[in-house]
Amino acid sequence: MDLLNVQVHRIHGDLAELLFNPREADLRVGETLTLRERDTGRSVIVQVIAFHSAIYPSLVRDQLHSLIGPEPIHAPLLEAIGFQLTLHVPPYKTGDETIAGFWALEFKTAAASEFDKVKAAGIPKEEHARQAQIYLWGIGEYYRGAIPLKGAIIYYENRDTLEHIAYEVYPDPEAIADLLARVKAMLAALAEGRLPDDTLPLDHWAHAYCP
Image 1 (cartoon, helix red, strand yellow):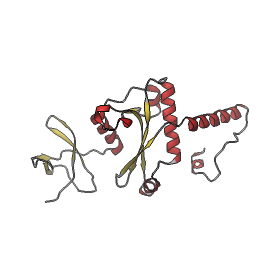
Image 2 (tube, one colour):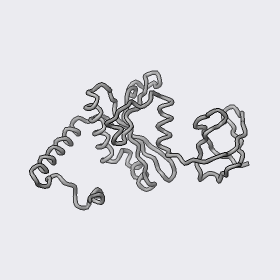
Image 3 (cartoon, one colour):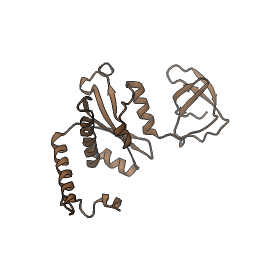
Image 4 (cartoon, rainbow, N blue to C red):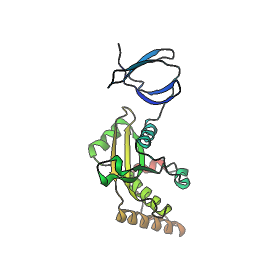
């Protein structure tokens, strides 16, 4: 008997949504599976009636909110740019009081080679840490300090293997002040009809996205 690692995502009436890695088994509609609980040994027989693909990071976010709560806070401005606002860790959910509170979440997927570099470095990529600082600053400005953010969590997923790591980024007022000063200088230069002095090196990867 072939064993398959399956997780129950949710149950609707007599329908169960199961999560599994399609690389581990070649299931077909109409096949039957025996689902057995690892701890209790109890089992049930189910029949496969349909398949749907899923984006793993979005499932992780759902699972985090179901475990920790609450649902993401409604933030039209941030949602407009595709940013899901916060994760809340209540004090009673953790023995470490330093992590209790609100965190901004940023999900990143990467190819195996890039993921391995980030994992080996033991820190998030510089541009991702800078992005997290901007999110923390922007949320603070938008909500006028009403949401006491502890920091940001950058969650990396290897899109080839689904391996994942997460790094914490804490607010850095000096870094954001320097970044805002650079932005203001660039805007001032553009307003004067000239190119900003603060530019990326010509061989920087970001130039590949220039029009």
